[in-house]
Amino acid sequence: MEVGKVSNEVTACRKEIKSLAQFKLVWAQKLLVTKQTEKEKTMARPQIDKNKRKSCNFCADKVEVIDYKDAQKIRRYLTEAGKILPRRITGTCAKHQRMLAKAVKKAREAALINYVYD
Ligand SMILES: [Zn+2]
Image (tube, rainbow, N blue to C red; front, top):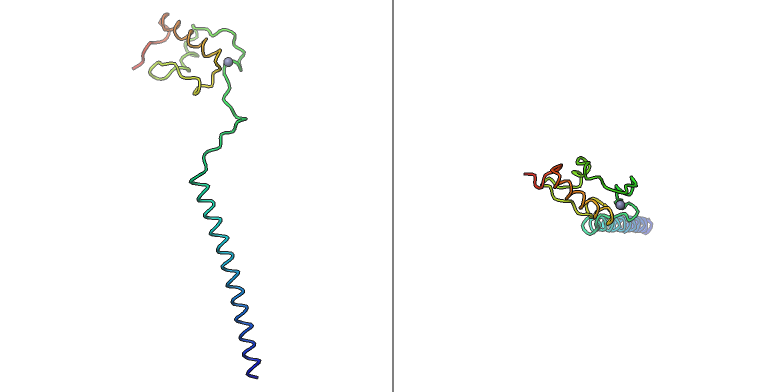
């Protein structure tokens, strides 16, 4: 009788140990996952989608010549202070940026837009 009781206890103990081991394993996995996500949160930079590039608005509209008289359109490519916005912000292509710069300067000369806005 005694021996059977002891063996029963041993098996129970073993079961407990097994469950404890499983618990530890699960816990470790959880920890690993949280660690990874934390790492991702801190390390990961916003992925720049290369397929989602800024495209030139003038190219999209197939503009051959930028009209300097169209002040409303030109003002979209200026800062609040009246400076010409760089290509890297507006996404304008080199060709159209050159045209735009000339158009802006012409429009300023013609007093259609201001040299400075304050
Ligand atoms: Zn363009």
